[in-house]
Amino acid sequence: MKFCILGEDKRSVNLRKIYGECNSSIEEADVVICPIPFSRDDIYINGESIKIDELLNKLKDSNKIVISGAIKSNIKEKLAKNNLKFFDLMDYEQFSVMNAVATSEGAIRKAIEMTDTTLNNSNILILGYGRIGKILARNLSGFGANIYCEARKKRDIAIIKSMGYNEVDLEDLDNVLENMDIIFNTIPSMILDAKRLDMLKKNVCLIDLASAPGGIDFEYCSKNNLNVSWYLAIPSKDSPYSAALYIKETIDDILGEEGYGREN
Image (cartoon, rainbow, N blue to C red; front, side, top):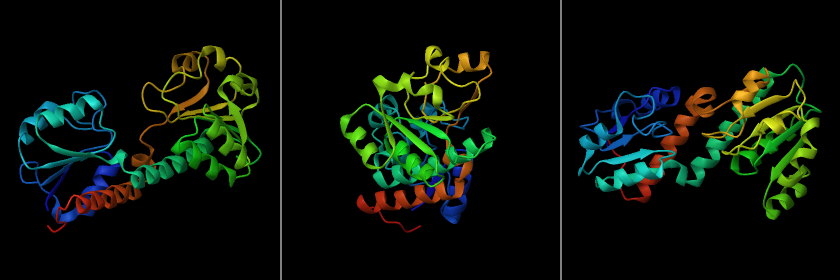
């Protein structure tokens, strides 16, 4: 099969290298691999000068396969209306887990860059106990950090306790904020608003890993010179080659499961 890899981030660049001579143009390709996320503004392909509608016009009613990640529902509807077979990498557990591993490592690296103290014995709060939150907590535990994990579901609270972390119910969040040295947010809705940011130490390190709109009041942080970073697309920044390999491996699995040949 022939592949066309769109996107100009490091992950896409490495993916083109991995596919090598299988690379092709949009017109010649059997499979068009788009960036992750597919689009940030719902107009252009992420990192490209190609508009979504332009790409769809080229692919419409063809037998080509479109593969990307974090495809918004409105774009999925457009792909379906144009009779295109498409797959979202984020729907595949093996990719989501490995992507979370890369995100966790990059987030920890960012925290080390943003602080002048060790992670060991630091009070670290993770907001949200989803896939990234779980892996982040596990990795941070190896540094000897005092880990606090916020969750809403009783099941997650029970798991947090069983792992030996400090559990934080959302209703009790305000009671622990003033003692935190580093806070990672994974929740894509406002959780650290101005009121809660006022409760924090002035030298606290804030890292938002959540997709738009994020979960931190960045305008307030800017006005008050807080140490904050909205750190997105970490795999493409910090471990692009590994991230590209994860994509390739998942695509191989998808095509195999769908009965498509993997030959050039």
